[in-house]
Length: 267
Image (tube, rainbow, N blue to C red):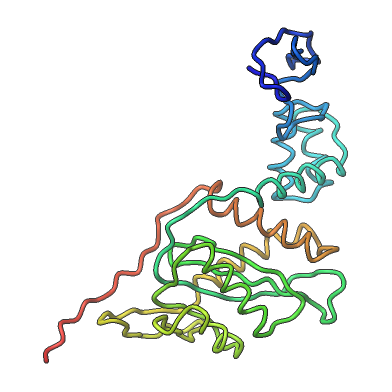
């Protein structure tokens, strides 16, 4: 343990706040505790309560999370506190940079979400995943056009640090020009529910966009608890939190793989 201000190790115990040990630096006189500058800093509730509230509020509304905490552990927490903790966790997650190895086949799609201020009845959530059901990136916008299609693909390219071999999309015309930012070697396949047989670099792939459509159904179940977002930034913040949970926290099932069929071409 060292002082957060002067990095001195000449510190002494300075009482307790509930179950949290407090310290005081003998050199600069600063006081701090084990929770200083952590996620639980300046919260009067124990760490376990905050973690449980954040996890429960991910699946249900803030009011239901407050009710479940009262029924399960007999601690009264306001629904506003549950929402604030969830938003604080979402901001913390958005700053975490973790590198993952994505596959060479990407799927991109967009879906409707409710955001206040949109000219249309709905806003749009753009999602890019690979064929192992890992979310690469997402983007929230008011318009469904070429500009936003390029933005989400550019974000996916920056995240993966390399372009895919194949990208699969639906019939939206904006993807035809947007996919060009990935490079000429990337093959753009338009497939929706029906499986298409595609040959690329001497290999045969059977591709459809059902994989990302299945993900959209999971996003719909999660999105219903919000009943819409007030701001575009808030929608993007919580969508980033969903991607973090989906990639790292949820229990993963058997990984889906697409095994290409190798052909021996006779010249």
